[in-house]
Amino acid sequence: MFLHSRRSLLFLLPVLLTFGAAAQDGLPHAMTPEERELIPAYKASRAGASRGISVPPDQPVRTMAEWEEVQSVVITWTSFPGILKQIVRAAVLECEVIIACDDPNGVSAYLEGSDYGGPITDLSNVTYLNASFNSIWSRDYMAETIYTNEVDSLFLLDWIYNRPRPLDDALSDAIGAAKNIGVYSTTQAPYDLVHTGGNFMCDGAGTAFSSELVLDENGPNGSFNQTVRTSAGVDDIMQQFMGIDHYIKMPTLPYDGIHHIDMHMKLLDEETLLVGEFPVGLSDGPQLEMNIQAIMANEVSTFGEAYKLVRVPMPSSTGGNYPPSASYRTFANNIFLNGTVLVPLYRAEYDTVGLRILQENLPGYNIVGIDCDSEQNIIQQSGAIHCITKAIGVSDPLLIRHQPLADTYNTLNDYTVEAYVRHRSGIAAATLYWSTDPNGLFNTVAMVNTGNGLWQGGIPAQNADTEVYYYVQAEANNGKVQVRPIVAPNGWWHFRVLDIAASVPDRAGPSIMEVFPNPTASLVAITVGGAADSPVTVTLLDALGRTVMVLHNGPLHQDHRVFADLSGLPSAPYMVEVRSEQGRSTMRVLKN
Image (cartoon, rainbow, N blue to C red; front, side, top):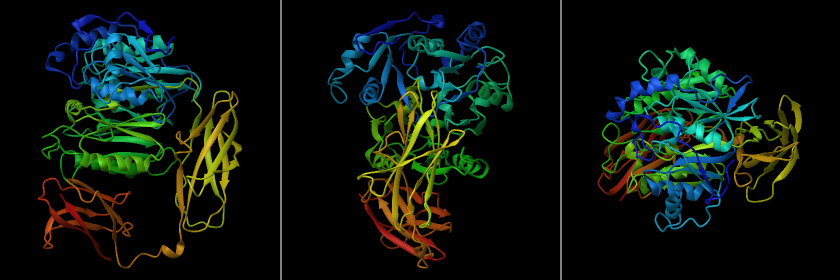
C-alpha cells in the first residue's frame, strides 16, 4: 500500500537487471543504434519471463478514457528535471504523483528548490518509488487502466514494450505491486502483443485509435513479437484484454520517426478529435489529412455520428522548418489530470493560438502550459508532456457518458438530455443542471431512469438567440457523487437556440469574423463565417493587392478556421481576403 507522504519510501527490488541497463540513464525516445544489437537477447528474455496475469480477463473489460477520474500519475525522474518539476507542481493539485527514482532525497530537494518556478511548498501528494527503469518515456511502457464490467474492479494492462529496455518494460509490475492493483500482461504467447502507449488512444466506450505501427510490430517483420499477427489477430487481443471492439488503425506518417499518434492527434471527448495541422502541402500534412478524411468518411463515434474535428496548428522550428527538416512540435501531446490539462509550449506566437483553441474546447479546465522547446528542449527527442506521464484511473469510478446537444431552431419543445450512468453500487439519482448564464445560478431537473443505464431529463424550451449551458451530476448508492464534464459547474456543455429568420444565407458572401492574434509575429488563426459548405479561397495580399500566399482553397473545416504562418514575411501590413461565388470579405493584419 502507498503511503501518501514525500517522506514515505517504497523499496522494491528491480525486476530485471540484464543487458547492463541502468536506471535513470536518460535514453532517448527513439531506439539508439547500440540498443538494436540488444533486441535478440531482449526478445528471448521476454519469451521466457512470467509477468502478471498472462491470460485474458474472465469478465468483460473496458479501457479508461484519459478524461475520466485519475487517482495517480506516474513519472520517472531522469532527464529534463525542469519539465518534470513543472508537471509535479500542477499535478499535485489534482492527484497523487508517483515519482520512480533512485534518490528520493535528491528529488525532494530539487522540488523544494528555487529553479523552474520556485519551491513546491506542499509535497504531501507525492510518493517516491524506489524502482528501476531505463528512461523517461513512461507513456509508452507503463500499463493502461482497465475495468471489469465497465466500472467494477480496477486492473492494469501491460504490453510488450517496443524497446530493448527491460527495466522500463517491467515498471508496470512494480507500480501494480506498490498500489495493490492486479496487472494483466500481453507478454506471453499465445496472447503476446507489442504496443506502445503513445500510439494508443481510446474513447472509454470500446473504440480505439492507433497508427499501423501496431500492425508492423506484430506482423512478420516485427522485432519484438513472439507471435505473428494479422490486423484481425491484433484486434482479437485488444478485445479480449481491453474491451476494444472497434480498432481504427491509420497509415503511419512519412516523417514521424516514432509513428506515435499522440504527436499529432488527441481525443478530447467521445466524439471530438483534436488534430494537428501543417501548412498546406508541407511535411506530414498531406498524409495526415488523408487519414483524417478517411476517418470522417468511414467511421462514426460511439454515438453513431461523424466525429467532430478541432484543428490546431503544428508549430515550426525557430528557423521556420517542419519535419523532416525539424522536430515535431505539437499541442496534441497533452494530458488530462482530472480538472487540469498539461500542454506543451514552444514559442509565444504559436502558444497563444494553441492555448486559446484548447481553452475554447475545454471550458472550465485549468490549462497549464509547460515549455518544451527552450532550455529543456525535450521536443527534439520526439516527445513532450503526454510522452513522459501515465495516469492510473480511480478504483471506484462513476461513469457518465453523454453526447452534447447540438444547436437547434427548436423554440417550442423541451431539449431532452440523455446520459449513460454506471457505478458498481448502482445509481441512486441523477440531476440535470442548466442555465442561460454560466456565471449565475443553475436550475435543477431530476433525471429519470429509463433503463439500461440511461437517465433522461429535459431543459425547457428557450427563445431564439439564447445560449444554454448544462451539466449532469450523478450519485451512486454508496454515496459517491460525480459530475460530467468533470470540471462542472466551472465547465459545461452548451448549445445555441438559433433564430430561423436569420438562417437565410447572406448573399453578400463569406465574412472574416476574426484574425487572431493581430498584430502577429508569425501565426494567425482566421475565422470565417457565412460560407456554410461552399468552397472558399483565403488569400493573403500585400499592400498593393498582390497575392502573397494562398492559405486555403476549398470547403472550410468544421471549425471554420484557417491557419497561416507569416514568420517568413517582412514586417508590414497585409490583407486577408476570403472569396467565394457569393462574394468576398477582407480584414487587415499587421505582421510585426
